[in-house]
Length: 364
Image (cartoon, rainbow, N blue to C red; front, side):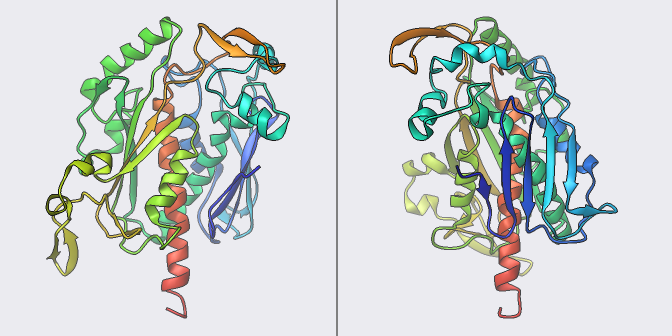
């Protein structure tokens, strides 16, 4: 079961939703990067459950423990192991799921592939696995800030269900995003989005939406042809997040309605630097960053667990019914924002280290 990501900055996550804990091992982090548990906790607190009245009521502090790889507040260059223990796990809420497959969950497909599964909260397929990713990305972010301080990664909720905000990726800032509990980049839409989530939750239902992200001040040259194109690695990273169903960068699907003369990003010079007058490419051309803002969007489906009766099949292949139980987000987007940022930082950190090793090393 693959749980690894990255080539030079490599992570391997572990743990199940209702097991003893979840975490990550990071290999390839450079030495002498300032790092404490407090650095990680800031990002984990943004992802944790129970942080507002539109998220799951599961109460987890998600307190991290660094088990190895640091000494006196600095990384050693050796593998860094991080553990977050599960505290408020209630596996008994999922006992019916031991016999019945939850619609649109990984229950059936895990059984079909492995012949076994942890049915307590989805086990390995649960979004609780992303704790390890967020913890690792907090370190990746520190590496990026050390090697290229100008890089800035921001994500925000662009739309929830049929409600869509208006956001300028050039000017949006973290304070605006964190000023509302749905983390939309358009605070004027926050109240309507909050009410929509509460409404569908009261109906025992769920909704999805779109998260948009930007990477500002990314240097030109990150990404590699042919299979490790920057947008390809970003797409893989984003689509590995639970509940994702789509990824587009730059003009995305809307670019198909344009002609080449309209879509091409014309080059010009600004203070000796190559720039583009438009950014339909989304900051990536030929799989390599061109120095313009990297702009992409990720589609999240409605949460699969809903509190109403649905048709399903049992593990004994009998048709039956199942009603959702346990504690779940009616909309995953507010808590998915830091995960999208995390996956972006992981991909950028890996590619920046690879670029420095290959193109700025002794053989460059």
